[in-house]
Length: 150
Image (cartoon, rainbow, N blue to C red; front, side, top):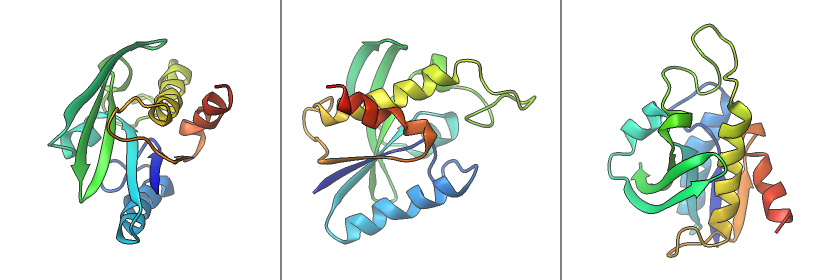
């Protein structure tokens, strides 16, 4: 079975709460049980720095602008990164600025995360396609909606 975890953070690369802990442990546990589990994350600066072997899988123009899908590994887990610097290359928290105001384009940033998760299930990576897309928390909440709309 092939499982894609769609989420916005992963311990120890980036953590704001318990979601990161789950993503830091669950895929590795599934891999230990024989599941081909991988993670899809935005290429936030801290995450990008931690996935040092990332290679280009695909380049696309999307509703949110141009993106590059990368694939690499972290602690034995396959990691897909959505490289869209205009959306994700910001310091500090992935959700708000240094004044604690939510980024005004969060709807676009996380709609893109869900969309790429759904596109993965439709063959965005020609060499790997998940049987299950697991959308974690509100950040990935549109992935099932995009899949249902197909």
